[in-house]
Length: 320
Ligand code: AMP
Ligand code: MG
Image (tube, rainbow, N blue to C red; front, side, top):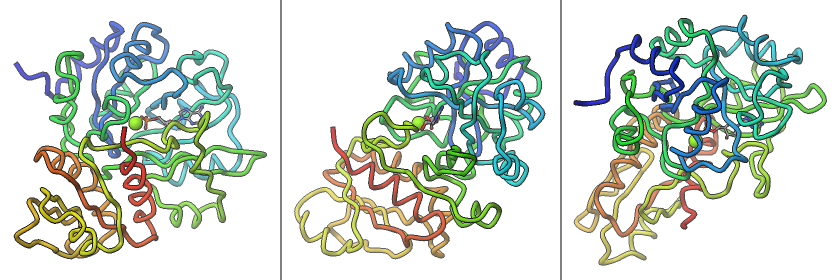
């Protein structure tokens, strides 16, 4: 029997019994557990093979629930929360002492957001505790954007994947912390910098730290397909370099298809950056199924969500 279903009641009883449930969000699927259950939280780390220094995002149903998780909310965090929640923005704030160290990797801050997915919002409203939910993929693998991606990863490890369809935004949330009350972007993501700056003005971006990352999404090597991935602005030149090889193409909007290309995916026929972001991981999952020698990916224009997609593709070029 498939573990993919829309049975919220079953999700509630599993979570209340300290088990894990995969949940849909508008960014990517999450692997969720009760933040106050040490057993559930340890299971999240072991299932994902995620190192304990990588803290988890706490998911809450409403802005009112924020006070159960954090002890202080800077003025600009309030503005951001009311502008973008529910949505693809994670805020890193001073934690309440009741939030377990396992969730925050021992930090005195906690990452929190309200996801924008009807099924998961209903689940969160009906539970008496928030959910910790990192992306439902093994550490360093591509994040899941469809229920069957999670099933391929974890069918032997979990009992239920709540089916919420394909994730609308398709890449992880944008993470913002605060240093001296001022917003700092720790991870580029599904909410563009342009949209954030329209609401609170200029923000600092600290997206590249190699050691002891403030945000795990900042690790250089991350989000990788199994296949070698090359990122380029000149697809034709790279195709020539890999003559005789089994080539896959991930292009932004143009087609490069010829006899030498085994499989090509176009992220957005009409050059829409939001659509390209939505399709990114789904396309990488698909390209990874063909046993290609190489995936040649095209750099997107450095604006809007193109910046977030280029960030993920750049990290995907790192090999084990
Ligand atoms: P994932 O849910 O798999 O996308 O990963 C969780 C993300 O939350 C990581 O990239 C972390 O950077 C971020 N995160 C969680 N807690 C904190 C925290 N206290 N400070 C900074 N970043 C955090
Ligand atoms: Mg992740």
